[in-house]
Image 1: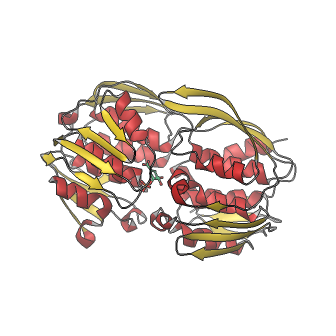
Image 2: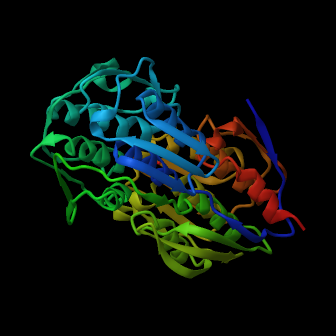
Image 3: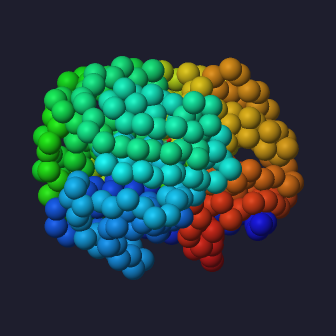
Amino acid sequence: MATKTVQPIHGGLRGTIRIPGDKSISHRAVMFGALAEGTTTIEGFLAGEDCLSTIACFQKLGVEIVQEGEKVTVHGKGWKGLEEPAEILDVGNSGTTTRLMLGILATQPFHSVVIGDDSIGKRPMKRVTVPLREMGAQIDGRDDGNFTPLSVRGGQTKGISFQSKVASAQVKSAILLAGLQSEGTTSVIEPALSRDHTERMLEAFGVEVKRDGLTVSVKGGQVLKARHVVVPGDISSAAFFLVAGAITPNSKLTLTNVGLNPTRSGVIDVLQQMGASLQIENERLEGGEPVADLTIETSTLHGTEIGGELIPRLIDEIPVLAVLATQAKGRTVIKDAEELKVKETNRIDTVVSELTKLGATIQATDDGMIIEGPTTLSGGVVQSFGDHRIGMAMAIAGLVASDSVQVERSEAISVSYPTFFDDINKLSEK
Ligand code: S3P
């Protein structure tokens, strides 16, 4: 297990970095490419461990996939071309691989077993296995199919109309993917809009997707057609440097290639709400997704309230927004964010425990946290608990701490941002 020491930065973070590919979109590009007829080429792919797990799983399902850095070629086999895997499908740390793949496996006339790491073994899967069973799949696992290892025997499924209790793109996507091979129409109704990359990319692969407010529907029997996919940079990765730029003295940095899909860009709203000096330039559309370059400078920040429909638009950014709030004047309240408890770690607990170790004034609540600022954070030893976003959030805290911060289990960061520390170094070089 690795420990990374982060030194406080006095001379500021300056310069430009290009944000690596979006994790959610990279997963989908591989999966949809595998299900499509023809050859899909992907550029800007995120070669992080999670997306490599997706590639490995689909290779075990008989799909030829060639990955060279950010370029991937997927030799699609169509819905009928997947093969019964001879080995267990190992999703590693990836919830997106688990849940979306379960939706696909539910429709396949063969048996498969899905397993992941310790963290995956604690994440609730009934939110997908229950509706997929209702559609006709046989799925079993610990706690009545709630936890991996999960065993799936798929087959002919039928469309359902599913009212999801949580705003989750993984749930929505799993059911819609199963719906594409089911009899009739499948609809998912969400309590609030979750990220819509599946809907956008399915359309780009030639599938008809009906969207009506919080309801998304697909008809069964639709074919995906291979295409070229350009993956924009991941706003969830950019968020670490947006916060770093705003809170580190003497900073001005530019992040290029940042995906600004409105279902993901809540962090921008919050930064602006808190008074950050942020410029959005060169706005363009790439592969059906809005993209821009962002410049952020050291800012005078004030506390805010983050809740309601904003939560699904920034759920993965909450650990680093908590770090931001420690440097803002006044109180920041994060609420309606119970979903944090079922991420790679219970992120209410892990954010609060680790920031407390650095001297932050932060308190856990049932559905979020309350932070009082500004606080001069102290140095110390913190850890990621194997959660990439906790590791990165603590490293960003280390940039403004009064002494060095050691981040234990820092290897977890390669799940979504293998070049994270290289980018910190680039921006702090004089
Ligand atoms: C993701 C959806 C979100 C997010 C995760 C990626 C996706 O999870 O937190 O990092 O790619 O669909 P939920 O669907 O559980 O909200």
